[in-house]
Image (cartoon, rainbow, N blue to C red):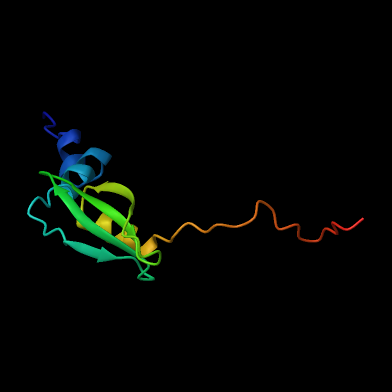
Length: 107
């Protein structure tokens, strides 16, 4: 009796390979990209710049400095990735090179 089991087809249909997962994640072609989105702390604003067939580009603007100068431009391949990035994005913090914790600098 011949065994007609196709392992490649089984793995792809059950999303058990990295390629099948990537293909299924990128199926959302008709997504609605938001025109703007804010970071969790409302200190950064993401403004839609360009939409391609499978991705969108956003400018990041720092709202606390009131200069509306874009800090960066980032491209996302899904709305979910944009939402996750905006939720986790925090503004870079300045500061000193070292805190000198536990050191006495006076000699």
